[in-house]
Each structure stands twice: as C-alpha cells, then as structure tokens.
Length: 334
Image (cartoon, rainbow, N blue to C red; front, side):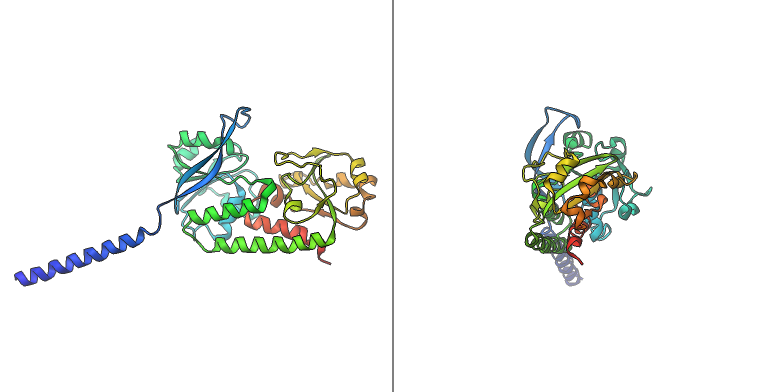
C-alpha cells in the first residue's frame, strides 16, 4: 500500500513539475510591452499652454477591451481581423465612420465619443485595457489617465513630414501589443514596396505638383510638410512651389488664388474634396475655371481627384494608405 502511495505521489509531483514547466514557458510571452512615445499635456483641445513629453508607456499585450479614437488604426486592425487579434470588445468613434468600416458602427460596439472628445461615461462602463488616441484627441492623454484609473494610452499621431515612417512605427507597435502577428510585417513590406514603385515613376516624370483641398467654394493649398505632404516627401513629386505650405503644423492649408495657380502652372494638381469626405456635396467644381484650365495639369488631363475618405478621414491606415498610393499611381497608368 505504501509502495502504491509512493508511486502515486511521484506521479502527482511529476505532473506538477510538468505543469510548472508549461507555465514557465508561457512566461516567455510578456504580459506588457513598453512603448516610447510623445504625448501631449493639455487641459482642453484649445489649451494654449499645452506641452509635449516623451514617455515610456506600459501597455498590456493582447488587450481584450480596446477603445479607438483613430480610424487609421481601426483600418489596420480590420485588415488583419479583430477576432484573430483576440479583441473581444471595441469602442470607436461613431461619427463619419468610413463605409468600409461601417460594420463596426453597430450597437455591440461602444460609442467612444468623437474624434476630439471622449465620452467618459461610456468609457468608464466599457473599462478599456487600452485606449488609442491620435492627433485630434492627443490633448486627452492626461484626462484619460485620471478618469480611467491610469489606463494604458497609445498615441498614434502621424508626423506629416515623415508619413510612411510614422505609419510603419505604428504598425510595429501594434505588432508588439498584439502578440507578434506576422501579418503586421507583411503590411510594412507591402507599403514600403508600393511607395518605392510610385516614387520611381514620379522622379522619372519630373512633374511639379500642387495639392489642393476644396470645401464648398473655398480652396486651400498644401505643400511639402503639410498633412498631404506624403505626395512630395515619400512619393517623390517635386513641389511647384517649394516654399508653399512647408510646415508640419500646416493642417488647414494656406489660402491660394486662381491667379497663383495659373502663375505656377503645375504639371499635376492633386485634389482632396473635404466636403465629399464628410458626406457633403462634391465641391471640386470650384476649380473648373479659365485660370486653372490654362495650366499644364488641366490641359494634359493631370488633375487627379484623390479618395477624400482615405486622405482626409482615415490617414495613417494600411488599407487607406494603399488607396492613397494607388490614387497617385493611377496618374501613370495609361
């Protein structure tokens, strides 16, 4: 009897040791990752005394409840698959949701607020493991921390002067957070390859380009360091005016005249229709006049209407950036 008890004890101990070994192996997968990021300290979106700081943010890996204030990140996670990433509950901004992401604009997904202002009552009930903010919501960092018990906050704001680098950095951080899924690497290589292909075409063409956003009867111009500077900085188009709109903070563009457009005589005019992007009536007709039509761009049918949702609403995504690249590449397709 003692021998049987002894053998049983050995079996139990052996099983326990094996179980411990399994647990120890699981420890190779970190429960948290540390992301170095720049955050904004502010009391409101209009705070003139706001400041920036580089911080090391500790973020739980494989978070189950994720609140997202950036359609670009929602686009990236959607391309891989929310379920595949292990996300069980989502909270998103439900205003101006792009059509291809409308499957998330449902009752089972929590309304996180607006792109500029969180709904803290909803978020408190949602109890997020991770909140993802961007440029429009950057000011909320401290308030999210204080209102939601020190919740992990990831800032995915894109640097307009380094658009592709910013997108790649965001995808890399998301890979660290979501268990090292290799599809993130595929995204990066695809974006880099396709960007390089268009850059070669653009540089060989030596086209000088202007970028405009229309909104009703208004037009504004964007240059090298602007929110649409990807066209110049990474896709390789020369700027018709190298000094125009050259600044990362130039999110609203600069006022331009039709006479200015005629004088510069660009080879290509890229157009973002803001009114259409937010569900209004198309406004590109404002550029249909004698002064604009006298340019090389108009005479050679090189006035390119960009996908306004991709460029204005979902900038920074994977699928949206592919759309942006293909918009520009279409210029060279017969």
